[in-house]
Length: 145
Image (cartoon, rainbow, N blue to C red; front, side, top):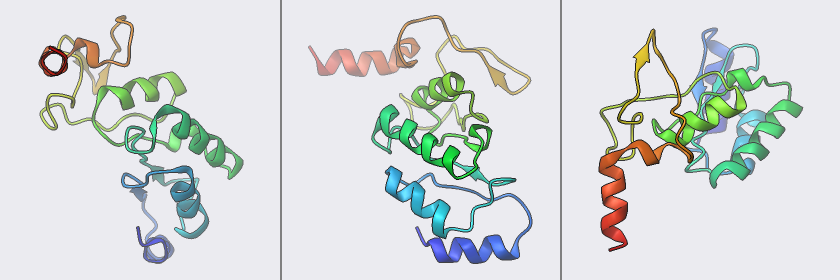
């Protein structure tokens, strides 16, 4: 990511900037906050927890953001998959990026999910959400047979 260019855009653009989907670690996210000109009063951080070493690293990123004055409501995980959806719900983030028709069989919501007024509820099935995606379950089952 070109942090300086992002900072220049932020200096000259008063609207919201949403970025961070290609950051892979706490160090990357910290560099975005230090050098990328991101503004905690309006901008959105979109780190993808699956790409950024999972939940533990994502929690470290959340802690760093808090220490720099960021609300968790300014975080909208990238990825469009169930893992990010569950993290967004558990951590009370600002939402979750989703595109149900893409990145199958992992993308989108559980097969029986109901979307109402741009919101979706989590299922009560234990796990991180992939368990309610029949096509993905088949891929995993076939890999282990």
